[in-house]
Amino acid sequence: MHRRKECLLVVGNYSNRVGYAWNNIHRLFGAITEVVDRAGVDVVVSFDEIEPPVDCVNEGHVKEILQLSPAPSTLNTLMRMLQTIRTRGVRYLYLTDQAVVSWRYPLYRMMGVKSIVVHCRISVPDPDPVHLDRSAYGWLKFAMSRVPFLGADRVYAVSDFVRDRLILKGRFPEKRAVTIINGVDVGRIRPPATEERSGPIRIVCAGRATKHKGIHILIEAARVLRDEYGCTDFVVVYAGDGPDMRWFEGLVKQWRLEPHVLFSGQLSSIHELLERADIVVVPSIWGDACPSSVAEGMASGRPLVATAVGGVPEQVGDPGNAVLVPPGDVGALAAALVRLIGDPEERRRVGCNGRRRAELALDEKSYHQRVLSQLLADFGFEADPFPKAQGLDG
Image 1 (cartoon, rainbow, N blue to C red):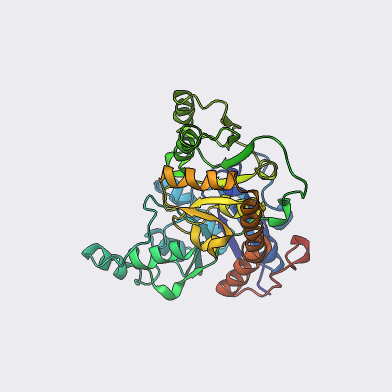
Image 2: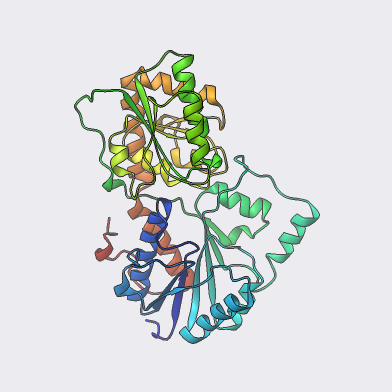
């Protein structure tokens, strides 16, 4: 057991009220705080912004919840972070989506931090795999990442796509980066009922309303379904909000798609929406690291149509577990949808395969186990990583 004067600081880089994928991250925070608390180490959790109540972590296992800048860039925010480390006895840092090499890390270590772990879920504009950066800047990154104390001691990447980018483009040491694919709470999403459902085919999509997520591609595919395939017995239900929402609404009006595209707004949970779906679409056009929407779509037992970007193919696994189309290809997306709309048996088969894949490889319990085992080993904590209170005993 460690002395209680040692402390782990878990650093979130968004508000505690952010939804969708961050709900999964916050549940991981809860699992981490419980296990580390049981190891005899104090836990402090911080968020970039705090909006009460803070109900995303188990306060019974947290000594303190603070509002700290995850990447302090001003003297005041930096001094507050350094003071927090010194006065709380922070010896271990778990950072979410921060730089793997930073000038801040030597300062943190000077204040007493012994080990730094960065959990990297960062998506990027380029949807394609990267190549080794042999430029002068690439060699500079190679050298900087090997300077003592400048780099994280370990980086958890949510997909090989992310890990390869860190190693090949970021030139981070390969032995200090591990892949742990994200998981979702599969058990909370009910598979389809056996009886046939009547009404138009419901095509469901959820995510932030930005061009990166490819919502406009799905809207245009709906136009192609209607105008080129003569398909009218469908409705696209989109849940989300964001900076490009007005543009998406304008496209629907421009093409007179109001009967076929409905906007549900941002939902606290998309599980109920998924359970009413016939087809789930994730039309992302950028390098999505490991989108929760893909795992949730497969867990729903409904056929998933997704783009082959970033870490998505790793989540899908075998080709029969989902239908993958090229990013930004309206025609390919529309063709995949019209095929599924017209073939209930293929919908059932792809949906069943996806659900099985989610249960075996993408379940949140197994994901938590992998993260906790790695974290305990990296920090040298002694504890049972699978407490029954968290339901992590399988």
